[in-house]
Image (tube, rainbow, N blue to C red; front, side):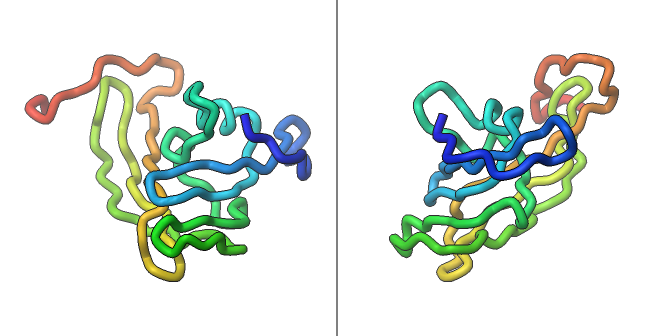
Length: 133
C-alpha cells in the first residue's frame, strides 16, 4: 500500500494516513482510515477510488487530472449523479452514485458508489438482475 504518513487520530481508534487513490482519469490524495485503505487495495500495488465509496471533500488534499496533466493542490469537485435507492442484491441498496471531477476541465477523475444494507445484522445475498423486482 502507498501509505505516506500518519496524520492524526480520529476518535480513539481510527488513525488517518494519507494515500493516493487511482481512478480512470487521474488520482486523488486523501486521508483514509486503515479500513478504507484496505477496501481500496485490490492487490495490484495501487489503491483505487471506487471500492472506498464517497470521500469527504475535507479529507481530499490533491488531485491529478490526466486530461490537464496537472496535479492540483485541492480536492476535486464532487458531482452527484443520482440517488437511486436501487436494490442491487438481497439486503443491499445503492443509495448514491457520483463522480470526482477536475475543478479546471471538468473531466472525470473517478467514480463512487454508496451502498447500504437493509439489515446490518444480515449478510448480503445474491445480486439482482435488471429483470427481477
